[in-house]
Amino acid sequence: MQTTVPTSQRLKALATHATEFKQNSDHCSGQSESWSELDLDKFAQMFVEECISVVEQHCLGVDQHPINVDSLKIALRVHFGTQ
Image (tube, rainbow, N blue to C red):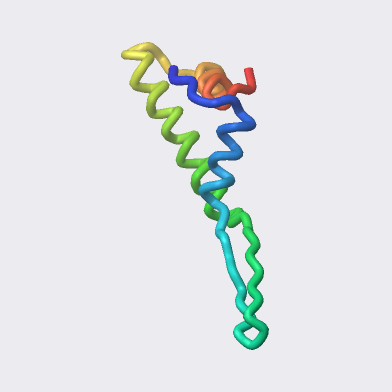
C-alpha cells in the first residue's frame, strides 16, 4: 500500500488541479479582474482516477491472495489518510 499525502492535502491538490483561473478585462477602462472556479466534473474525474490507481496498486500488492471489499476499503482509507 502506498501512502502519500494526508486527506486534506491530497484533496486540496486535486481541487487545485481542477481549478480554472479566469480573467476578464474591461478594455475600455483598462481594468481587469481574475477569479478561479472549481470544475466539479474534472475534480470528480480526477478523484475517481486516483481511486482506481489505489485499487490497481492494492491488487498488485496482494499477490494471488483473495481480494475482498474490506481490504480495498482499507487501502483507500490509508491512501487518503482517513483511517
